Length: 91
Figure 1: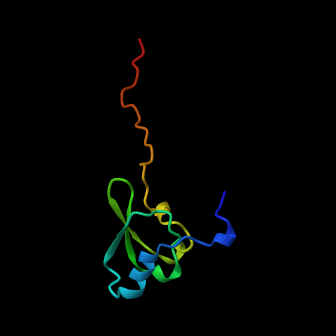
Figure 2: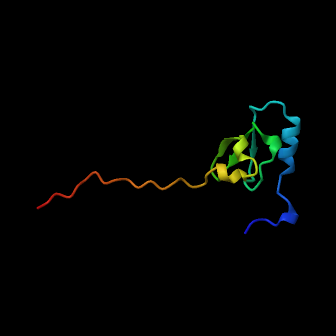
Figure 3: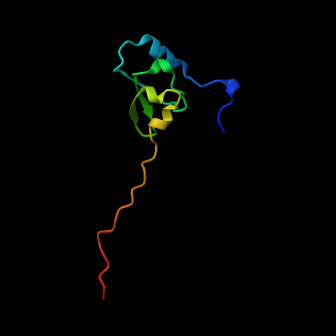
């Protein structure tokens, strides 16, 4: 169930201060909150989003605006099934 419209989107104040004050766009700002909706003023910035183990660098592009930060920092690796190299020999 999505967030109610009357509540508005959740945006962390520290990221807004970072985007307003910082002129260096290559600097990676670390954040632990993955539930922040990406605003327009963070366009072309790099953020380090914590995935539970390490900070993954996320470069904010035009397509990411309006999405959550956690969508771009995976916490679990995709499952890869290995093929068996051994083939059963017919008797």
